[in-house]
Image (cartoon, rainbow, N blue to C red; front, side):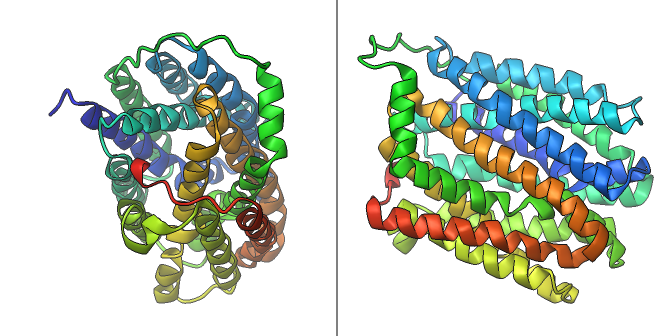
Length: 390
């Protein structure tokens, strides 16, 4: 069992999301602990997302052409360990902008490559993707609780230690992934740029727009939810529990995504669920509801994130040629987790400084635009579900 592809991918996803569970909710709090202003925090977070935007596609093209799928993932993982360790002595916001750019590039650059690699192996029947990917979400929850408790006990400087430890675990897990040896692609009849341009000009472009805008709507949440909820008087352990609640329903959604009516939903249908759930989630969270209502609203993470994530994966599985599998995922990652999220994070710093928790409401705008793109996608490309990857 320990040598099976499914176990190795589950180990990698577990290590990666263990790290992400410390990084996403708490890295802004680490910055806040070093006495940086809300505007600087917004720009530093945005720099990390910009790094993701610029570097992910380059790593993905390497992965699509590499003889071994594992190599780009391992290189990114080793680089992430070094870059995060370099944060320790730094207090200058300008240096942190540079380090954040690099860390965003090497941490998030792994996502499209590993997803494309895992989906390829799942399509070959080596394991079922949904439960393996869900292991990552489980570890995200574990990290939320553990890091929140550590912050309450030892202070915000423990956040970086947890991130560095997680980055080391990712590198170890990456080294244990299957090599993923592949035969060279046959000679292409058209240039890569021509094929990609045609893809983006068609329904794939609408899927990209829907995913990028809806996922970009999480910008305020990722950058300022921990700071905002701390200002409302909630402990770091409670904040970790709120994040964990959202990821718990994400796990259930992904685990069940190939069954029943969820398995029959088209990619556009999933993206529409994501857009509608996002509008509801951010609009009501902006009202600073009581804690019980915040937990209920966190359940909408199953729609705003998981439905959007799976909707794009299903669409790409149908419409992107295999030699562009990682590149297609990277373009989505660069737009949704890079451009859109960077703009949202930078804007979030401005609105948080002036509106506090009410700044969540600004995220309704990209979510609504993403919903419109998903509706248009449903009209021009009503693809069925892709059960075999779930």
